[in-house]
Length: 420
Image 1 (cartoon, helix red, strand yellow):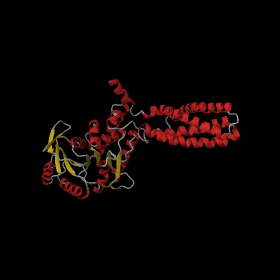
Image 2 (cartoon, one colour):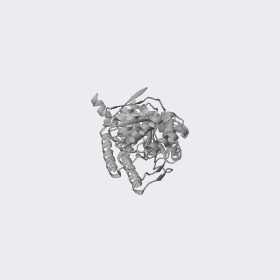
Image 3 (cartoon, helix red, strand yellow):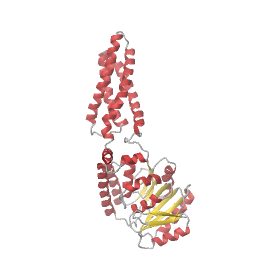
Image 4 (tube, helix red, strand yellow):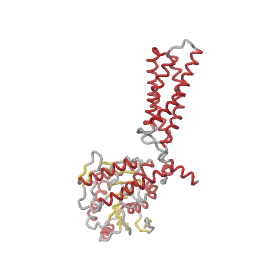
């Protein structure tokens, strides 16, 4: 039986159909010298160390030497090696072509020089096979990684990742390590939106995956630089910087359908650093609320003798309100940094005013009905009033922080509304 792989340039490649769990793609361009050694070593590793049905796909990017002939000989020798030939160059183009049409559960790729130690392959793909993660990347910048390469490449790599963190708010550590894997169903959702066909392909895909809310698993790797690499570092760096500007603009203008992708992939809108959706926010809000209530009770009891019931209530509530707003800002709703902090505190104080009105009113009513109520009865009434105020506070704080939470996808939502 055969299977047709639709290429990005609309051509069709016919390859054997064989369902496997893992499809490892090796993109190559004029690698006739190293290809056979790479494939044999990788084939042996898959057979000896990977407990899943696996396949190697050699993706030939318009090679002009004998690379394709070597690849075809290997495919004829091994049943689990196949070849896809493209008439145009581009690592990103090769990966999109093969990954989009793969019948495997998980798709991966690695560079033909096998700079990354193959011992990291199973830790890379296992979380994807189990369903725990969506994307997995090898990281040369993790603390436990062992890397051998020249200072020039080291500096460029670290500077590039700093640029990604600053410009695109990326949190993954190593965008360009040639050692990555994805669940195939996720790849099919994201790949149509990735424009780059070259070296920036990896970064663009990872940024998109992270913004959508996919879980990215990072594996520290041992990596030895290939001194014979033909990659033009300067040209690649310039192209990558152009890609950063393009993707940053697309995210800022809402051209990328982040919200729609979250829906199609089963991801609710995210708040950075906290569990997904309202349930996660409620959990963290409850934790902050319990801590705030305990702090309020302690302060009220300490201040009651000195200041009286109403003043002690006001002071304790004011102190805990400021701390509560700060904690919820960072812990519950994931809003960090100084931007908007003063405005959020003022809005939080407005919410505090409502809580003060509710609790002070409760004390007033209690003293009218039970003039001789003890401090502990007062405290019990105040706790009940605070519980009612807490529910209102959660709703109000979601409104306060909502503009920041939705800033990453507001333009997308507006665009979709206009289209409808």
